[in-house]
Length: 126
Image 1 (cartoon, rainbow, N blue to C red):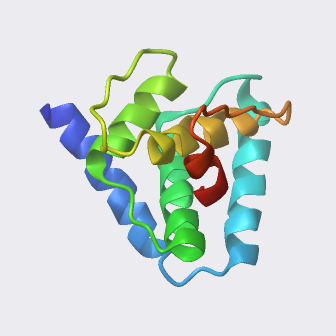
Image 2: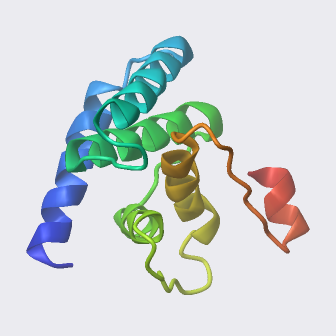
């Protein structure tokens, strides 16, 4: 992992720790604030700080609802996809969880997001 990637993950983990005791209402409120902040600057634009907060919100929600912690590789793959690049992950590395990051980030536009999987088990589980 490159130094910039380590710094990004460390920043996400720091914000995630701040959200450890946040309830679902607070997480929703923070997501709404992110959505508003996104469009105050420029439609479709999200600052690095907002990306970090969005990732932390996904991590906090996954922990609360699925009792799951996203691994660093899942965060990085999710951010890569959110930025429009390809992320290659091996079997078992958690592509489904990684997909939650770009799905949430793109949902901030208010236009909706579709997530498709050909694995029925994963669609039921996640």
